[in-house]
Image 1: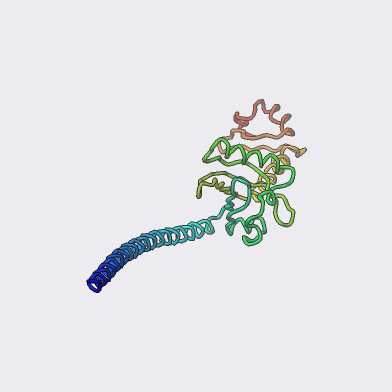
Image 2: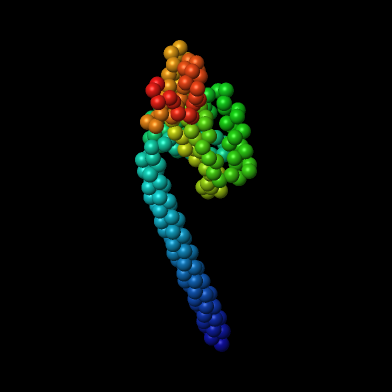
Length: 231
């Protein structure tokens, strides 16, 4: 009888152990399944993120190529005023390479006497959430210390919740030089001590310098009127 009781205890113990083992095996299988699902979900998310990053990089490269082919200088800065991008036209205008200027403050490209005003302009542009600011006449500062006149416009966009300001800049040094030459020529005719007139084909007086006053008075006419038939 004692032997039978011991045998029964052994059977119960073995049965209980088998039940525990079965439950543990089931738990391990469920856990492995869950871990496998988590790994698959993570892989899908990682693949999506990598795909998005690749697409963003491709788009960024495309935009950079477009910007580099723009004739105007294009400089982007963050809200703190540090340069983020610097296209090839900007390199030619300012004399800095992209490598040496990226991450530097925009103040390097502005004459000292205009820096405070420029900082306020950028701050107001961000504060009042302006999207575009039209052409303004400004002065830039080249790497060699030379100042130059320019036309600039501002626009802004957000990248990863950070405001980015794009400055499009056109060097107008040649235009300003030509304007000065035209003004000089205009002064030359007006300051000429001899009469200088411009008369159209139908004899209308289009222009007369100060020295021509006595002559046209003698003719009895004025600018905008016809000159005598025999002049």
